[in-house]
Length: 256
View 1 (tube, rainbow, N blue to C red):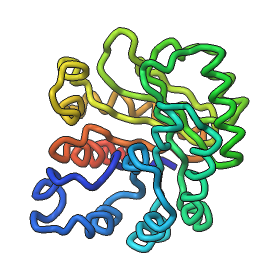
View 2 (cartoon, one colour):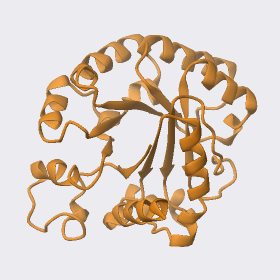
View 3 (cartoon, rainbow, N blue to C red):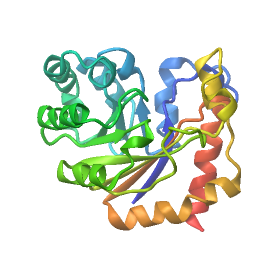
View 4 (tube, rainbow, N blue to C red):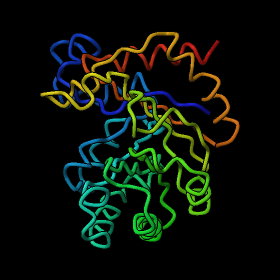
């Protein structure tokens, strides 16, 4: 099974491009869930969530709709109190878990998180703290692209997040690997000029993929589908709803 959607949904610049121009922000999720099978929740990286927020989101979406929840930044970036951060985060996830609506937790690490023994041990501790909750890991530094890392992720039931992003030295190349029952791909765009040199964060993701560029991934996605139970594909090139355009484009390409 392949599910294609976007990273996040509550963007004001999607009004008129995807949402009705006069939509209330509280109505966005219900509208979005009519068009896509899942979404990534990014606010949980910036703010430790609580279960009441998730109860509210569950009530606005159909029972088939899934949520990928990005791990709180204290877990992936600050990394100074894993046990307490994990306990609070998992407690908040309880409604999602109980309703079988949690697709997985996305662990997105910064470029500074390098392939060291200390960091590998930290990943193992995260796995232990999260128990059987499905986890997928997105690295930013290319020194993680090694067979030993793929083996480690398989041994610890952690999915490898494949990425499409600018071909900049040091960043993760477009590698595909299945390391758990979940296949995962994130499209960040290929805006190399603005990846580091931008004044506003959204500029990094200001990119519209061509049909030909998406076609490069079709055989890879189909191969991942054979190796996993489900493949999540999330478009993160969100500026001006370009993620929506490309998600629909990829859905059509996968049907052919």
